[in-house]
Image 1: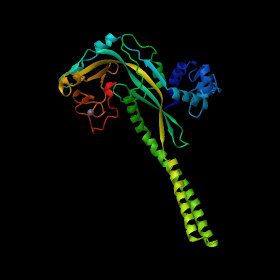
Image 2 (image 1 turned 90 degrees about the vertical axis):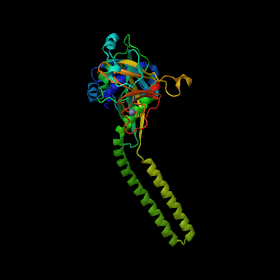
Image 3 (image 1 turned 180 degrees about the vertical axis):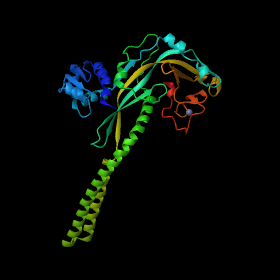
Image 4 (image 1 turned 120 degrees about the vertical axis):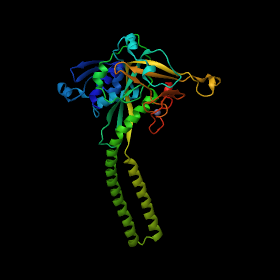
Amino acid sequence: MKTRHLRGFLDEFLTFRGAETSPAGEHLLRVKLPKSLEPAVGRRDLVLAFNLRGIEEDPASELGTMGNPIFERILGLARDGGVAGVRYQKVPPAGKALAAAPNPAAKLRLAPGLRVDAPRAVLAPLWLLIFRAEYSLEEQADELEMVPLDGITHQVLAQTPELVDYWEALSPKPPAAWESSSPFPLPRPVVLAALAVLEKRLRKRLGKIRRESEGHLQTETASIEAYYRQLIDEVRNTGRRWALAPAQRDEKIRTLQLDWKRRSDDARRSWEPQIEVALAAAGAAMLARVCWTLSSAVSPVGGRSRRRARAPEVQISWDPVAKQFLLPPCATCGHPPEGELSVGEAGLSGSECHPSVEPPAARGHATH
Ligand SMILES: [Zn+2]
């Protein structure tokens, strides 16, 4: 991810922490930090540049990139405090969106006995999650990765939006007549789904890091080996020259061999390739959805006598902009539900998905 994608978030975050920010041209952000942040950042007045053009325009600016100490300190603040922002899509009038939405009972294959309640105009988050990946190899710079994830389907967007433009086109105030509740705290199933996406992306890079680590390890193992072989040879020769008792000599060699093994094990451990991932920022872009509650008229198991069978309920949604239904992940397999939809105790399931029935990464998502 390009660092300039961070601009919107940093602007939001620093404002939230009491800073005054003003854009200075296209590439720069002027920041006056509150006194409270001075100890952590080291300065109160600064200009952040989001690319090299910005640096050219104002040579005193700080380049917003890994390796710049000021930028890293700000990011550190963000990481410790967590950057979280909510913004709202400019939505059509709720009545119009409701009237234009199709009837799910007519458009989706619903299992017999499923009830659909009246549609509601609801705002639901599109999550823009920014992770920081730290690599165990020093020459590999840390990276920022953005995962845009739909809060309903838990699917990653096919196209990563230009974060700055996207975020800035959203409004800080919720629109009237649309139901809206705070998207935070970040739901666990969303985090797990985002991590699964990230893991796939990083796996490729881990292969490269692994090869590089192995190179380093081989060099170090060889130099450890040369060192101990020489010492052991010396003990053998000394033993001959000074008539060291064979038992003593063997004992010394054994100690050296153990030491050798310990040093080699240490080297292997320290060159083990690792990527540490931390969530650096979470933005919730609240988007317009028409939402229905699906409920199973049939009580699950055991009839109504058992704890009055909490009739399972599931939300399904319609995206009035993309004009498509949005379904939560299948409770059986975690994939998008396909085929006939039914509601069980775990949530919504499709009759034709579950390709290999891997357990859903996010059990219990229907309850959030
Ligand atoms: Zn399934």
